[in-house]
Image (cartoon, rainbow, N blue to C red):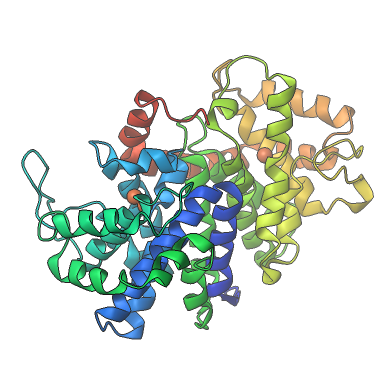
Length: 432
Ligand SMILES: [Fe+2]
Ligand SMILES: [Fe+2]
Ligand SMILES: [Fe+2]
């Protein structure tokens, strides 16, 4: 059989990441824009070529992406305390796995590293890329601005701070470049006026990089890790849904290409959960009305984020309609059976099947009989498709095998990050 060839544009996928960040954490997205702007100006002043400028600006535009998963706020990022490298490490691990952007992972990993580590500060075990120091300087300068106050009256304080730390905290050559660009008033006004919005993406828009299936799949996995690795209970969810949905689709005679798209849709089906605090996602007791309302937003956000990618076609609905029901009483679109694509019905079955086999704070993981009983009950209530549940029952061992293999792999990947997320809990984050 011929290999499936998708052709996607890298800038579309990158734009989608930015759109998601803007939707989910506007404060961090704004901070990213500001740091990207300062970094780009520094690159120009330092005479970097177009290629280096592009990658450094893109790194700056994504540098705190790990903070989104750790649920850190801008004020958590303001002080360089013992936890400050956690989000850099998380962001770097995520980006390592998205092949087209993995060259920025080491830059992001070290973006809080001092030029000269001082007393009590761990010396990095590996070489720090010089451009990490650009982002560090840009980041500190941006975070010193009090946006509730007029910016020009603050600039001398920030410039003095940067000058004072020349050759210790900051790379001396980069400080000199900063002092030059920070002279004119417009530099500061650009930062706070919103005119920096989208600076990282705009540079990238000029690119016309075509991606194939494996890279697009790595993009969906990259997003699923950002969503799932926020909590140990969810760490393997999307990969389980993706694999069981793809296995079910194969049995339901979807084409090879459609099965690949179902797999991708499974990885991103809960993308909108980024907008939901883990305190609600992991709540052990029953949810109150407010919490239920918040949860119901997640598949809507999945839809809004993915719909930007035209090439996805039906994949968007397959992913985002996984909480719709045959009786039209699902959420958030209340789509009745006649309009509900079979791919979305497969996703709904795979989502429930996977969730029932996972442990929750209030119950143990279920096995074959218990999970099928519940699913047949849902068929009776016209929530999910009975033919698909029957196919699942007939091929239970095979589908369950693929779910287990995939979830085991995710747990192994998550184990690397687990200590950082345990620290997150100790720090009391996650209750936005
Ligand atoms: Fe940071
Ligand atoms: Fe930052
Ligand atoms: Fe969901």
